[in-house]
Length: 173
Image (cartoon, rainbow, N blue to C red):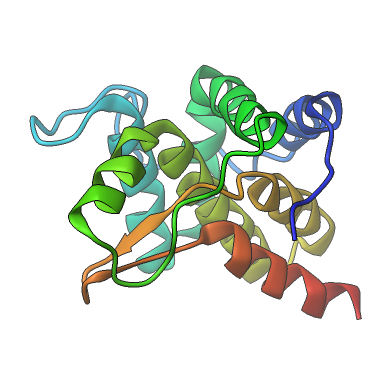
């Protein structure tokens, strides 16, 4: 099932989501989370990984701040790429264990992957902070990024958008 969220709605949701920054950055946030200090990670990957690590460390406000700091740098372009895939009826990559060919396709969509993971970290953090309305909004942004994939160190890919959809459904009941 493909969501029918228009690009205009997505961009509006992106802008609205920026208004929900939690607190000033603390010392767990890099001086500039938009620029990688890790030679193995590009800028957008560093940003997403930083937010995920902050979420894992239960530094929820810091994760939200990190995502908000750089979202406008990568979010709109990733949204345009996702919309083009929808418009072109391009299938999203599989989840689970994948072939080397599929892995290469997933890696080529690195920006969508990074943005979907960052949105997952922000939505999940807002949820943990009890900011349910902001979490719902950010989950909807995450859901739009249907073709973004995340690597699980256990050896398979998963969909942040699918996980966000499950979490927001529980909030809407």
